[in-house]
Length: 351
Figure: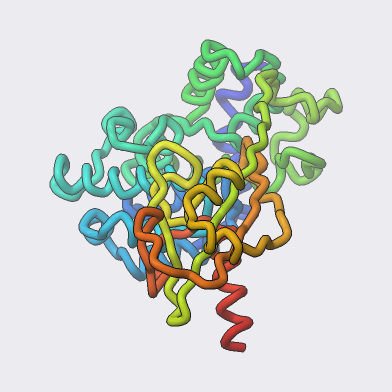
């Protein structure tokens, strides 16, 4: 597809397609409230829409405004985030809310450039907020948009190289609507995200349903699977961890707050050890005799597989140096596998 042709036709055709086929029922759509848009954008990073919907609703119920979120203890935020993963997002969310309140009188900055000065807001999130809420003529370049544009234009440069990604961003900005921005920019931004999410999908894109299929280089050449080009591969690793599960008869559980940085930073967790030997070394000889092992299991993170070994201390006694006894463990932020263990145990005991 010729670049000049793309500049002239893409935004108009995309807006026409979206008017008929775009998504309109998601809870964060049809709003220009920067708090709600920002919250949804952060939650949607690396997380599926179907998962985010319930978390989004619970967050707004608990923290209806950015000031409410800023005033809340971080532990409350992490507890509500538990299970959503990528917990640095929750810590940055809280820090960003506090910065908006303390530095900007509770109002989000109106430009993408200023939004990027806030914790946890990168270029794409800033562009989404600025275009959706303030109609700024600025392009997002998230995964969906990269896929749409590289296929459309046959852009085959390696996006693992920063200058190539900047080049694609320049092209994306050139292709934005030029007039009636107050109306068109929010619609355009939603439209290109929807096209990538529902039609121009990573595998088996529905090219027959795409408004640009006749002009799309990748579709015409039958090479959609080759775009976008990104040679940098994520290296997976694995780690074995031992968790000490100590619980009193009253239901309180021994938890420690994880340090930052590290695995599950900022969350409350069963005391965590790098080996069985270090776990046993933290206990008395009698306590070591009381240990019972649960079957080991694997918890998958984005870049790492955690091989988890849970050791139950059946006759729990005072272990103050390892953490704190927490009665209402449901009210604190727990890693997903720990929350599952405790919840299933509680259900069995009270079923």
